[in-house]
Amino acid sequence: MDYSLLKYPRKSHRKIINIPKESKELAELFGIIFGDGGINNSWQLVISLNSNADLEYSYYVRKLLRKLFKIKVAIRKRPNQNTLVVVCSSSNLVDFLVSKG
Image (cartoon, rainbow, N blue to C red; front, side, top):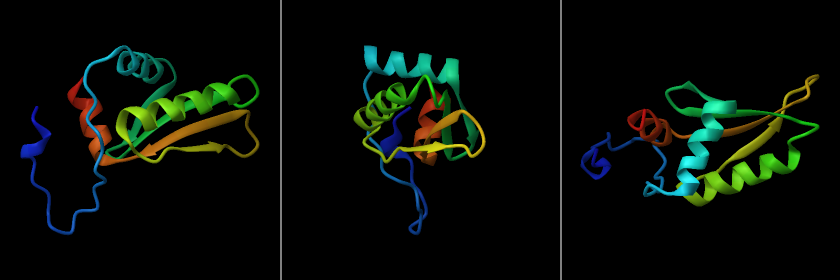
């Protein structure tokens, strides 16, 4: 799908993202999402990790998402749980991921 042809309302709050070409890094991200992530809603990707074992890995995942899509990525610890969540809030990102299956 050619995303450049999509037209959004003038007051759209959609964030501009980089659309990456097929690569090993993109394939790795798909594997991460299939294993530990999911799409929460029409605008948010969440990847859940263990806060004790995966802290350094969460930084790697954030760096990978930033590199591929040029977007902000947050890492949050869930209160009273051993869970870190890597969160990307972007409708365009979700649209891209859904278009890839």
